[in-house]
Figure (tube, rainbow over the protein chains, first blue to last red):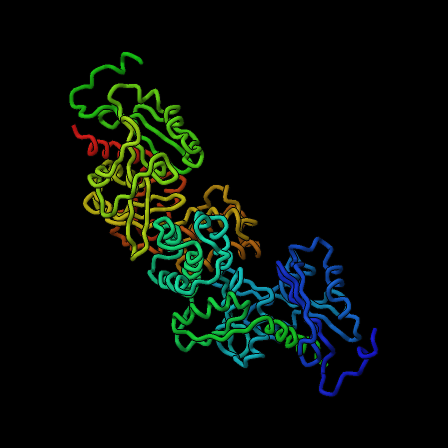
Length: 308
Length: 308
């Protein structure tokens, strides 16, 4: 252990360093945050929970973050699917509405100095909805932007549309848009004539969004990606963007959007870019955050969880 | 050749016998119709066009229908995907609106005494739509029911919703409901917790239909089949029916249905049953036809194609 690591914390640092970990289905990412939440170092590995064998979580954790944890007083907070039944330790869902205080109160211990953030559940007219990890990103986005009321959108395999009121998560809905796009692009009849690896074609994407407005629904409009190819009206690259526009347009149809809606997009640029374009086509402006939201969120929860 | 086959046709029989063939993507079915359109014999084989190698169509045809064709004067009409670019001989689409006369005029020869019925194309605000084979079933249903105006629905992998006016096809739209159900049940996250082989659970199916009315769309409502399993609120069998209800309900949302809408369902009982239930839940009555519609349709086209 190096001497520098034993240096007393500087005045104003209320908390020891934090190892912030986002452990998802397909990837594992972590950041070493200083007492003020600044990122000192980041690490990632293709070791999502599906790539970890039963009982293998402690070893994977040690391998990636062991050296960070050696510093005296360091604590770790993990969010994401590592807290599911298939994960390291199950952290039962915290019910909506919930802010950082409620979520922090439900954090559960995993190992000495390591704790797990619970996911959130919502009730949608008798049908449950769930998230794991996104709640942390939202709390981080609230902290980073100062926006305490609005719509927060997290595109991914299962997109989350989250209503935030006074800095707390009031409710949310999941949309399987990312998974539908992958299914259609890989396993459906459309897969023969679309190239999902092609770069975004903005014109075709906008055509797809426009198409989604016709009231005939996704089950019909998706078939257009087949017939446009059949009649040689669109090539395989633009067709993928067209289908993406049809899907994201359909997703937007289900939201109560107005020109005054404040939307914060959180996620990977290649996805948030599409949602920003789609929202713009509806006259809705948005702002975008990336991975920094996760670290800010875990820092915020750590402050609530471990007050000193 | 048996003597009985050489018996002169009885008075009133205006046409020679017809071998009516429905050659689809995954199956091949045929019926021997007498001069009045009555079914004398039926045959089928798992030799849809995907199971026939290039150049192999004549041999497959001979093997199944050769003996029927030996009778003097017998002709054959084929409908379905055998007329597509991947089929035996391509029969270019006939444009909507079209009745039996227009479709019969576009029938093309395949081999001596064998001809191919074209599919139909429609224009839906600049995006094409297509069918192959369903047009024949609709003409048959019109002939069998006497209903010359109404909505004709053909459930399948790619469902067709067809507007018929004065016995002609005015327009139609395809819905990928069957393919979406298969994709979600086989390849999506839902596949882990639903059993698509389970028999229809009517209560769960109706719950799914009711769910589809909430305005949040398929991309959201499909996820309910995941969370209901996660919270152990529904078992794998009913969940499949629930998802089916969500999908078919979504499809119905896209139609202009009223209590006065006359709906004719054409297809396999296990599918038409679900649509009849779903329509009933919307206050719309329907009647149902099966394979007989295909034979009646090919008989009707044959009369137009080969007047004597």
